[in-house]
Image (cartoon, rainbow, N blue to C red; front, side):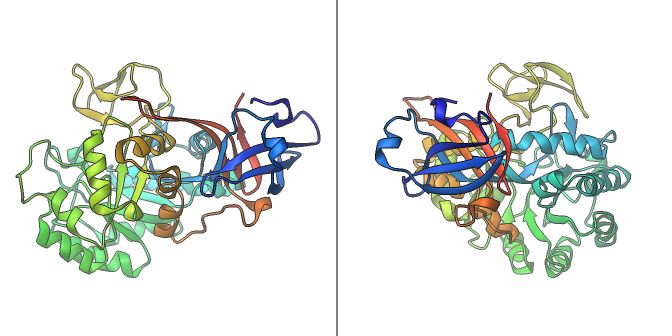
Length: 404
C-alpha cells in the first residue's frame, strides 16, 4: 500500500496519510487493532515522504445493487447466507451502505427475497450495518418492450398496495425505495399511499408523458430511477419520458455512469440540466458482476460479458442486459464525462443518496464511528476516463476492507 508506515496490521497501532476529498487537507488516520481511533492534520514534512498520497472521503452509498458474483437478490435460490456474501463484497468498492435491489418477480420470489434480507441482517450486525434498506424495482412497471428492460414481462403487473403491504410486513419495514411506472392504472393512488407511509417513490421503466410525471410528483414521487435507461431506444423527439422527467424539478435523478449505459455527452447533458446537486450515482450491478468475460445463462436468455465489462444479450454487442461495474467506477467516470470536481462527484455517491434516504452521511466529525474510504484516483487523460483504486474502507470506524 505504498509507504511502509502506511501498511495495515504491521503493529498494534499504524497510520495512513491521506488527502481530504473536499478541502485537500492532508490528514493522518490513526488505526489500532483494525479500528479507526482518530484523525489529525498531517505535518507537511511527514506528507512529503508519502507518494502517492491517496484520497479519503465518506463511505459510498449505492441505492441500486441487484446482486454480485453470479447471484441476484431476487433469484429463487437466494438465501440469507448469499445476501451476506454479496454484502461482504461491497466495502471492496468503497461502499459502506447500500440497498439490495429486488427486480420484477413473482410474489412468492419477492417474499423469499425480503425474508432472506431480514434474516441476513438478524444473523450479522456487519450485514445489518451495510444494508440501509431494500429497493423494490418493480413489479409495477411498464410491460412494453424497451421500457421494461430486462424485467420479465410475465411478472410485470398493475400496482397493488395490498401486495406491497404484505411485502413490507415481511421485510419488517425495510423497503425504503420503490420504482414504478406512474402511467399504470392505480399508480398515482399507490404513490400517495406509499409516500404517506414514508417510502421513497421513484419513477422508472416507464413511458409516462409530462402530465403523468407532474401528477406523480404531485402525489409524492421524488426520484427518477436510472434516468435515460429503462426506455425504448427510439422515442418521439420532443414528447418523451426522458424530457418529462428531466424537466420536473421535484424529481432527483439516479444515473448509471459505467461508460456503457449512457454515452458521455448524454451524462454531461443530464447532469447539467438536472444539476449535480440533484443527481445520484448508482451501479445497478447485476448478479453477473464480478464474473469473468464469457457467455452465461440468464433469466430470459443467454447473456455475455464482453472483455470491456459490458453486459449484453448474447450474440450481439449493443442491447444491454445489466451492469457489472461498481459505483466507484461511475464516480471516476462522471468527473471526466461531466467536468465535475472530485468533491462534486463524491457528493453524488455520499451526501446526495444519504439525504434521499434520510440517513447520516458519516464523515470526519466522529472518526471512531466514521464510514470512510481511502482510494487512489488516476486522472482522466484524452479519451480515457479516470480510475479509482480502493485502498481501505472503514464502516462504523472498523476496517472492513484493505487492498492486498
